[in-house]
Image (cartoon, rainbow, N blue to C red; front, side):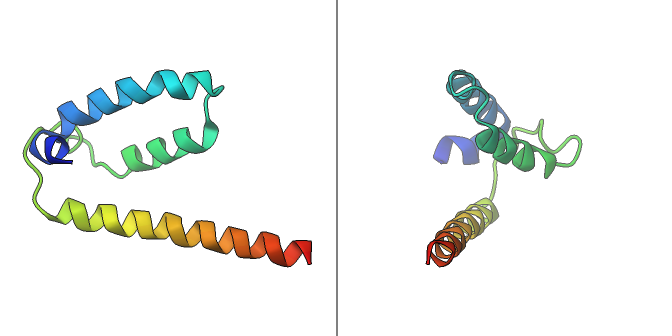
Length: 85
């Protein structure tokens, strides 16, 4: 997190390079690739290439995204249990 906050473009490039082989081994791991694509689509042209340090707002966004994914999982589990009954 501290490396990403300090140099987001460089760190994102490293992260993407490290996870891409795993995604390929999982036959493209469509869900994960969609999540990465969604993140990348949020950047405005030029923003993504900046290595300008991030302020604390990125932590707020990170927390909100984690909460959204957590709530989505809970809703899907609830829907599955209702369908089974």
